[in-house]
Length: 112
Length: 114
Image 1: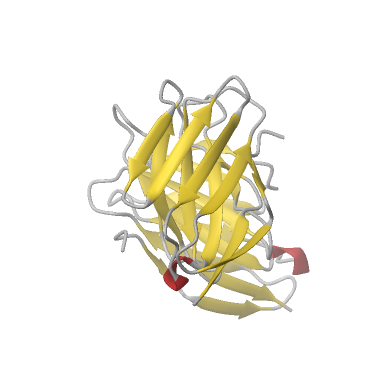
Image 2: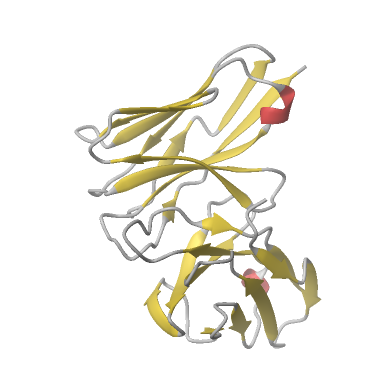
């Protein structure tokens, strides 16, 4: 399978703590993206990192990419209860056609 | 909000029936992809439409079909519904150009097959 696989499957933390989620994949990629999903609704795009980038920041989000290990991590700093959601990584499988391959996601719960 | 809309929000059908789901792309986008997300799983690619033609298909049977219209809106049709078709169906629009990467998802249609 070309899917990304997120780890852990579930993560429970207190507000103010940092949350780290990891993603591993199997094929070469052009880019890797992270999405967020609230309560089984639509996916919200968080950040895209290209294969020639190692780290990217967006607000409280920090994404790293290690193509030699075929892995990525998403760090959410100073978590808030509103960050409670499922987080998915998605890869393009090395294609430019736009098909995305998703893992099963990490369910993040942030307690007030 | 992404500007991608889907209808209906929820739908209940029985086995053997047919269903049509609709998606309006974000303004300026020319590509639509459809995904199926079963409970507890990540989205699975069904197919993609670009310039009104199917442009890539995942591991789904022919009873899953689609259309893209000149205004880049799209339909997903599923014939002979099966219980396992119960899922959240997501459409995503993007612009095929220099950077085709980011796909913007709609809120989804929750289909229940009884």
